[in-house]
Picture 1 (cartoon, rainbow, N blue to C red):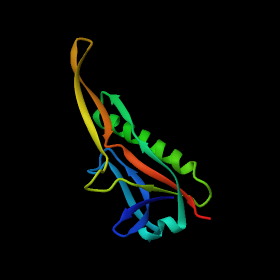
Picture 2 (picture 1 turned 90 degrees about the vertical axis):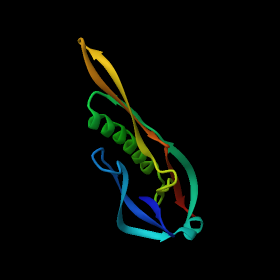
Picture 3 (picture 1 turned 180 degrees about the vertical axis):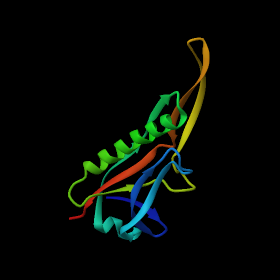
Picture 4 (picture 1 turned 120 degrees about the horizontal axis):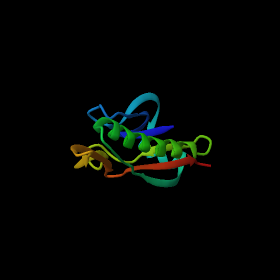
Length: 136
């Protein structure tokens, strides 16, 4: 299960990576579970923190951005899949502080004698997620 900090609680979230959304790298609270932030250390032990990063290139803007987001989602899903029974993943980036945003670079390329746009997307800063196993 994936959690994100909201105020003094960690709340369960669903991944919502959408190139057409205002906040492309997003999570939506699903209200399945929550617990106070000060209980993290008593409930779980830290396994590892991973930085997720991705890049994509292409000639169609939204498709290229979505490809980059899909690559990030795959990395996040691998973190969740590698959890022990009862383990959790916490998104450590905080809104307004170090929250990941897609970055776009546009290049002009010549294909078959015509000018075309070529899009390069990356995420900056990297997304940080921490894996935890149940304590005890």
